[in-house]
Length: 422
Image (cartoon, rainbow, N blue to C red):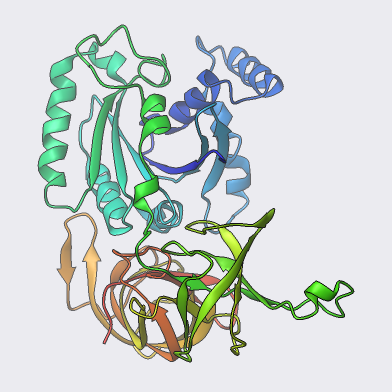
């Protein structure tokens, strides 16, 4: 069995130790190379710093950031014997809402860093709200810099109480609080001797053991077709009539012998074989990439969807969605025309209406808003030129999410989460 991968996003304000935390995770889990470590130790010594400055491990990415990469989410990879990890390091400032949306949209878990001295800031609330808007299933509030408040339990408890009260207004499935000192390594990889009152796991232990398999939608079968495979002039007689449909399973479990329906035609057929990267497989589930072979010869092309006859996505050309606008070139306004990419299907779309802009600090809805500017989020109605096969984002993040593309530049200008459609 392949090791599963936990994708997690880290969000925090400017000085609350995010880089140090990621550096500490990489350092204490032995996930960095000797030469990287030596370079960091040398730079720290040159700067006259008392400790090896682990933030430098992450800050090496800043240089590329300063060259004007549009959405600067830095991804880092590391593994322990139990699990592989992909970290999306997203900047915390309000002007980087789009970065947090990008980093958290595929995350299984989000770590929100809180400085023990400062407590819950407006930014902490905003990050928690964005994590719930993006349906990140697991949330960890890491209360950092506990060393600077004498490792006091009461400080941690007060932050936990305040955040829990705020979180009650949001739809958070799994919320965990861990007191840490990223600088000294307390409760990051190893349990801390300085906080005997804390009985929970270290951060890494929690990341290694948090249960993510059940977060995937294994009920609604959704298979967006990415590519039709017809080998040309097959020399192998067995491949002569081969026709396979390749894609990534976006929901449910597929097995040979299952009855399925093709959209948009509505025709039903049966799966005869499922081919994985290393040969036939007996079942496929998210996020596996496979090729399906079907009993009947149906005209299927990229952007079509395979589902279950009695469990189908909505087929619609009208979308209601929460959209995060990601460009400062122009605002999202009614009657604007854009391209929409939803699973493997790309179509043209027109903005019908902007219902409200959401103030993500107060959660107030501004219904007078005439559009959305960079980093703003609001509820929008779209009309699409061809039918899309959609679910609500709350039910399936893959079939419920989309991106908006500027036709002229081909740049991504928005990300959307489908609420319900007409």
